[in-house]
Amino acid sequence: METQEWIDKGYDLIVEFAPKLIAAILIWIIGSYIISLLRKGVRKTMTKSGYDESLKKFLLNLINWTLKIVLIIVVLGTVGIPTASFAAVLAAAGLAIGLALQGSLGNFAGGVLIMIFKPFKIGDLIEAQGETGVVKEIEIFTTKLTGLSNKEIIIPNGALSNGNIINFTTEGTRRVDLVFGVGYDSDIKQTKEVIMNVLTSHESILSEPAPTVNVLELADSSINFATRPWCKAEDYWKVYFEVTERVKEALDTAEIDIPYPHQIQIRKEA
Image (tube, rainbow, N blue to C red):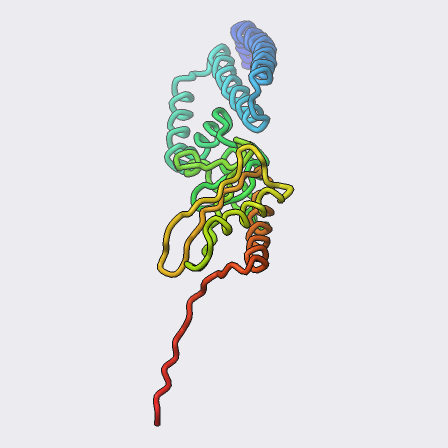
């Protein structure tokens, strides 16, 4: 009798749950197929819009897992498992994780903003958060720069997206700001000609915009000339160092005095 009761109960359970189980399996298969189609559509849209590859992968994974969690809840509800408490636990866990990872979420949001608005790209020379370097890698949470002395600089995206960013590469050209001082006995016109000859003869200095040499100030011991050549962004330091050296040599050749501090020593008689 007991065996028959178990058989009857088993049969009843099968009759009751089989349709739900079959429906749940069908919902999972159809839902997974729809999620796959949505991911392909979103991927195609982001590719056409020129989204960064890192952002594209992250968003696709985020969409995939979000939809799958929703699908799992629907499947569990179809089978008859109460999903209200499950959703509540999931929401509480999400809140706890969010509070624990506030800094990381801020960096994530900053990374998304950087990838969407693109204030810089890989290979650009930028100055941000007190650091200067070439952008090596843009990740979801951090951006890596290669410093001018070949050191790796890692900046959190939250701080990076909320601070000032100077991009030296965007315009393609840079102005090199130099100042040269000569003695008060020097001829201003001759000095300007000597410096300008150095600028116009340098192979990396652009003719447009044209370089300029002007009197900047009459300092305590020198007449200072503001020297402003333009060059390609990648030639900045080459122009900076070479022009400094060549101007010094040219001023020496023209016998134009470059003043320097003199120290007067007073000897005390014994």
